[in-house]
Length: 283
Ligand code: PRT
Ligand code: ZN
Image (cartoon, rainbow, N blue to C red; front, side, top):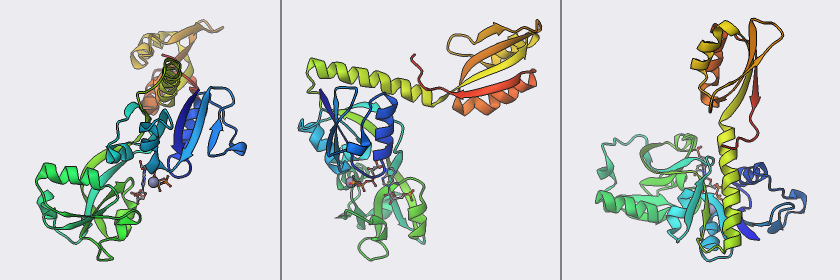
């Protein structure tokens, strides 16, 4: 049995449970308690506030955790990053009132900066040789300048909308974050095996999320051109069709390239192009 701590509610909860579901771990959400066992895998889910996850993992209450890299960095506890999960992307940035002129980090000398991430901020200021006062605030950091609590803030930004609506501008991106799977490195051999299995499944979920499966009919004369357009994992699959001059071509492409590839394939005569989601891709 292995125990994983995930956020009980908040921005990372849904994607954490979705990821576990996609790795085939079934949790009965209707019977969810603060500690729930999966129905078909020897794993227990411990639902916590995100702030506490690095600690419960480092002290061994849970062997694994899913949490923002920002929390891991801020707490500075001995945990290992096992996988970057590709969701919960954000950054921690310095922001100042938009009316201020900004020419570089020296602006912050002698200023008061409000944040919930004092350790990451302290390290940044030290690195830049800047002396500033850090005001620790746990919520609604963005209102600190208008409320007269601080001159600037150091806070999480994703779209930037919150900064704009509070009359602030982002001037330094200090730390890039995303959700990560952490462990405490104190796993027994059975738990290590379970973690390896989970990591293997997470990898195939991550790879497949970025892929589409393409099927199309193609004039045989265009096959060479199609092979240039579609460098699939080994090579695309080509199958004969009843009509002698045509074949059926199957391939996997990355989602980012999909529309460009489709246009190129249409231009060489591909017809009936079918695009399917890839459920799992085992490399
Ligand atoms: O209750 P609990 O303590 O578990 O949750 P929480 O309220 O502390 O955290 P939560 O659920 O807000 O965030 C959990 C994690 O999500 C964070 O630690 C980050 O790793 C990640 N994350 C990703 C974010 C954001 N994006 C984000 N935008 N966390 C917070 N925000 C805030 C940001 O501070 C800003 O005030 O959302 C606001 C909107 O951001 P903009 O830039 O899109 O306007
Ligand atoms: Zn929190």
